[in-house]
Image (tube, rainbow, N blue to C red; front, side, top):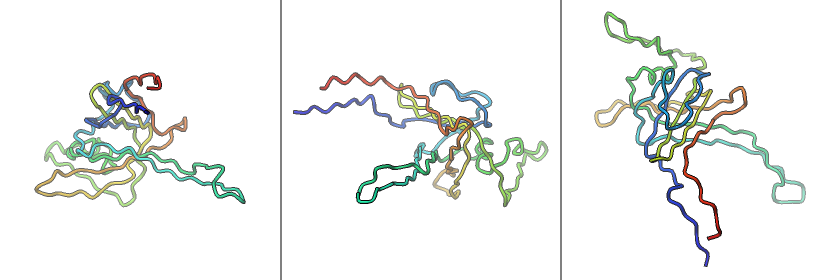
Length: 196
């Protein structure tokens, strides 16, 4: 009888995690277990929907005449995204992300204490560096996006029985090396397969 190999410690549950943002060109932390420091800015509390790492790919199949199965496939589009809902909407870094406004422009007036800004009808590019971490006990996954931009924003609801949040999707763009996402993981070792 065949024995099925299973190892619960090789599963990853997004039990906890977080995100940070900085200017493009900022290097990533060395480990997903390291605390990011300035110039990284925390995104604060994330909704319990966690972090969604998205894959959007298209391909072109080439089927030779006289056959019904392709003999070659070429990837024609490969996009990586990160989607999360930011709950700390009063945090300056989060406001800056949502409205594409530099953090310095969100400083309150020293006399009135009010923050004022306008949303433009012609937004410009707003690329930043991003660092996301998913933690499950001693297991951790780190995702470094050297050049990413908020490419989609959801509506914002203000309601008595729910927390307002900024649901954003960050699209990863290629850096100078042609890479979109760098992975740094702390994972348990996979046992050597012995056939049983």
